[in-house]
Image (tube, rainbow, N blue to C red):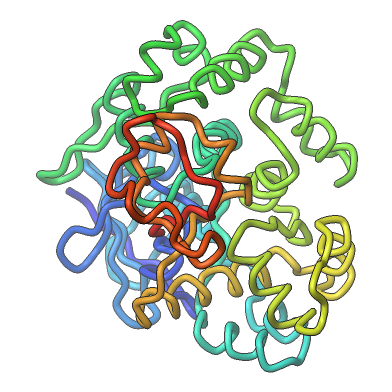
Length: 360
């Protein structure tokens, strides 16, 4: 196994990988095992240096320019460049954070999330995984990602660790809806299968959408099965590098309402979108990710029940398989405990109208 060391100033690897933007990395020892594209890697951070291990390395071909990392070994430019590109080391993080609004909520999130960067994800993988994320907690999204990779991806190995590539749209399009349901997708299987069909047929060319303006790109994404405004903004932010995109999920809706509209009893979703697009500015996507991660981690440390990282929706809209999975994690304050006697399961298979809480 070969290694390369890359300067990684102003970067926090663990926080970046655990911030709910990507779902396949696994903590192993002092580092993380995962893939950058289809290349299996083991990455570790030591101070301001990122060490990337690759099986067999990536030696330069004859005539190919070599570049040096921090260490003495030399590797093909593609290794260092692909890693640095994936983790967005070229983003001027200090300038981005300095552009955030100067308010107590944003300042606390900025301080807590120092070194968190927006990863540049492959477009199809990002789109597919956020379609799968609808009404799912982060732990479940990770399980879905692993199940899809094991069932339809290709096996790779780095050191003693086995990883699986994310299946291309063509392979998912050839699967059956039942195949996908066995990966714990539930009703999302139909949407993923339909979108995979559009991508694999060429009717939806994700790469060709890169030059589109934000409004047009968002409209294109929202036309796909299983994609609404929140998922579209996630894909725009994490796959198309539209750093102004501001996904609004349960965490962000709560933060915005409680911290920026504390005296308003009801704030509509369009009002929140309008506010977020103007108040947080051109790097709103980074601001959103910092607010999101700070809210989740603060809640985790305090032991407060935590909601799903996906779009808000009434509990009545949950599919029955999801209802069975999360039943028993109910906030009964809204219903005054009327359903408490039915816990931990509802024999009728119905969800109460009170709000469901999920652990992220």
